[in-house]
Length: 172
Image (cartoon, rainbow, N blue to C red; front, side):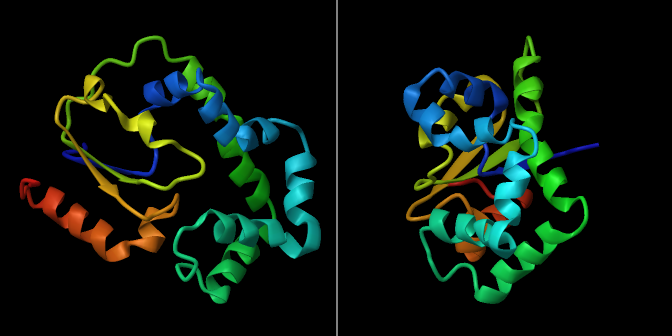
């Protein structure tokens, strides 16, 4: 069903689990542990008309012009919709069961491109090292001076890498 896979800004789950063995990555991912608490994360985001949503995007980005005020308001409005905030936080509720219940990852056989930023406050670049152990046909492209929001901060470069990969152009 899938001929090629493009992954942006997230390491292979096995590499993420390995990273959680380091104090640096645990510190970077404090919020995942916070999101395991019942009700409190939702209450925190709801305060001050969902300003924490906008602040998260603004504070994590390397390119402060990547998100307009209209963009941030759209994210806040989306989070305010009934059930949306809980759904967003549930993603993090399910991270630990999902990655820790996997006993044997095996090797992914489909061609995979990983596009990563170099200046992410949440996920260290080192989480991508040796990903080829888990992906047989693996390519990675790092984008310098870019944060967690790689597709918003560098859309032209991301699109270029995706087009090249999809059309089978080999990377230099």
